[in-house]
Image (cartoon, rainbow, N blue to C red; front, side):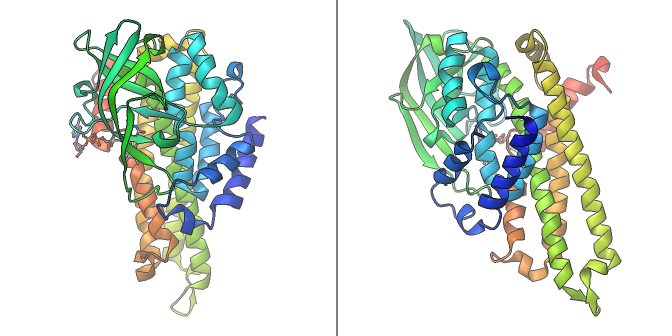
Length: 386
Ligand SMILES: Cc1cc2nc3c(=O)[nH]c(=O)nc-3n(C[C@H](O)[C@H](O)[C@H](O)COP(=O)(O)OP(=O)(O)OC[C@H]3O[C@@H](n4cnc5c(N)ncnc54)[C@H](O)[C@@H]3O)c2cc1C
């Protein structure tokens, strides 16, 4: 399936299955797995996986279009369907040929999910302070500790866990864990304000034993940082889809709402607001595409895994997430105000879009953290400045 066909199918899926289904998607019922199954039945699940494991091999730039379409329908569904990119990118780049085949091929063939576990309550964004430990016992690794947030864990096929090494102080590892391994315990599902069709959990590892062959090659936190380039770009992209939906909702409303005896849509103040929103959407979409292109460019190189390790976090991906989070939040504010008091009720669609938009600036690094990263990695080293 070509990138343009995947894009078209994602657009049709969003129109048929997501738009207008707020009652289901915002309800915080069990994650709507039959809906996600129907996406997989179209052959679209995990569309980014590489061709050598049977995937559609849609690059990150192509994925930006797909995620914009899915998020136009529902940001929580989009998040659920793309977040496996975080763990699968680590396995793709740093897994042995055996691990790539065993874990990625089934996800390409049948759909399914991979969850990634980095965050912990005490450590916060200072991942080096994480306390979940991985200890070598003969041919096995034994995991112990608690991860505060992990999306898709309950129904994932496998997990990618980042933990501190119990054997080499100051070092961290990343390891693949089958979801049904004894000792993987889901503590609870968090009730999130937005993205309520997605599901994020607190997870405990209690003497969880996995083969040492499941270790991924390289320093765990750096591997996570590399793969965050993909998921941060797609988190940024959800802001584009949600912003496009807000724009269209505002246009529909302004055609029926009258102000000073005329439809709001003809009022210059309204036109100014929508012109501003369109400009922001254009810049947001372009930055996400640029971040996707940069990632694809490295991925296409002869030594992508090493090249990514040298770069770590990419400026384009950080800029996309920060800019889209900020511009998206501004757009959500304008949209919310547009509907007057009705916009503040649960009966309006705009309230959900506002709550969904909020996550862009929070997940995978709040703005204080991403600003700090850009400053340290791309401003202090003079040769890296644009
Ligand atoms: C819906 C959702 C899904 C998630 N899914 C996953 C998942 O699948 N896997 C996973 O591992 N995690 C996941 N997370 C966790 C998420 O990535 C983190 O919550 C996020 O990165 C923020 O980190 P934190 O919660 O540790 O807060 P912190 O980053 O610790 O922030 C708390 C406060 O400290 C401040 N602060 C922190 N560092 C700095 C700094 N350097 N400079 C200045 N101020 C700073 C912040 O600004 C903030 O005010 C998810 C979270 C949510 C809400």
